[in-house]
Image 1 (tube, helix red, strand yellow):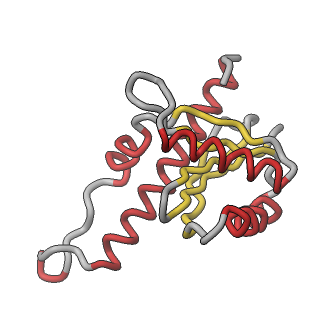
Image 2 (cartoon, rainbow, N blue to C red; image 1 turned 120 degrees about the horizontal axis):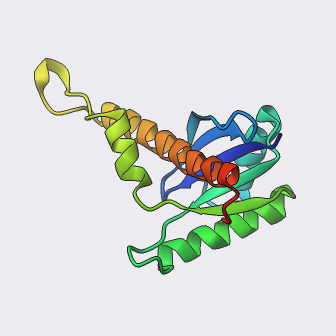
Length: 153
C-alpha cells in the first residue's frame, strides 16, 4: 500500500490531500502558504511527509484546455522536480484541469459576511484555503482511480 500526498500548487497557497492506493480514498488535509523559495516549500512539505508517513507525492499539472503545457504547467513541473530531488521520494504529475471548478462546487458558495453583507477578508481566505485542499483531494482521487484502473499517468 502506497501512501500519497496530493499537491494543488498555487502562487500563494499549497492545498494538500492524503490517501492511499489500498483504500482508494482521498482526504483534504490542509492548506499551507507558499514560501519565498522552493527550498522553503520543500522544508514545509517534508514535515508533512514525515508526519503523514507519505511514500510518494502527486502534483497537479495545470494543462491548457488543449492539453498542452503553458507557462504555469512548466512552473509546476519544475517545482515537482525540485521537490522530488529535495525529498528523495517519487513525485508524479496529474492533469488538474477542472479540479478547482469541481472543488468550488463541492465546497459551495463563499459565506456571506456579517448581516448578510460581503464576506470579510478572513472569510475569503478561509474559503480559498478550503477550495485548495479540496482541489488537492480531487487530484488525488483522479490519481487513485487511474491506478486502480491500471492507467498510465
